[in-house]
Length: 356
Image 1 (cartoon, one colour):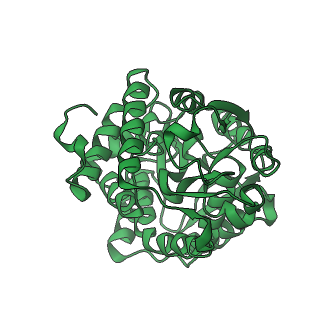
Image 2 (cartoon, one colour):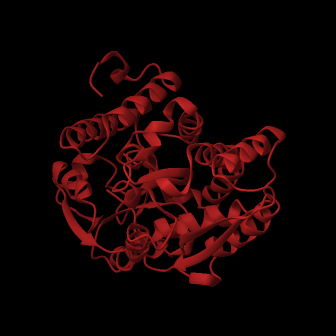
Image 3 (spheres, rainbow, N blue to C red):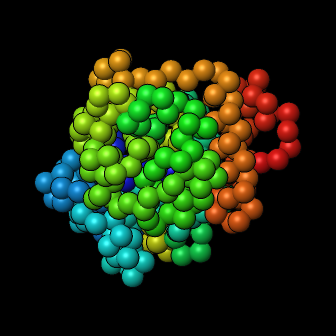
């Protein structure tokens, strides 16, 4: 199950919410100086790089505007980035591959093709809360995992949370996996894992694009739409829930935005600093996401009994293991996320099992 145009809206929201001024600590400034020296840059010589961004509104959108503010901040540290906005994420990905972009900000789903390790963070049910995400990002910023952030010609420079995705349904009775069987569920047309997941629970996957998924839900073409909470207001998903639908109160995936870069254009010391600074921004992003969740009227929430939660967890775990076996998810990342789940939720049945 996946996200669509509303995922982009979530990324826009995160970028706009995280627009506070960048100030490096003394330690980070020392790291930056060392990184610059490793690149052979003279004192006060600008490090220039071209960064591409996915923003549905182009140069007038919040992602681009937030990055513009960041560009000004970076100039104080002799880092000069040029920016380019893409309204089509597929075109952005192609522009990174052909070398036009030094780095590109994209969804975690798209990032998987560049780095299966970090691209597996958005695995179904792997992280249940923002607390889990925070612990993971802190873990990934550790130098011991730096090699995992690199995959051939590309590396993951930064990861930021974009909020949890929930199931928006047009019928409140669809509050269990058994009841979703036979219903139509929107899935991303470029992500085969989603179709497999929907088929496993006996539902019918309906291929959708970033542009069509919200309207498919709102006009009744699909019964179930996985989406982050920001989509409720931004894409008017309440229209598809009226009069008897709602939001199943259990997150199915934690979404991320990831900055993917050419490995040879950002040396390890510089890449490590970027990941550390990104991890430090977590609190402001969390505050913004929680504020957005609080805007949804309480009557839309569909409570999920503990027994159903266990069924969801079991189903998503089975799906992760199968997708890992097929090479879709990265085993090392799944193992790290399991340790995080069992650190924060030691009573989960999976914690006594060896698989994953």
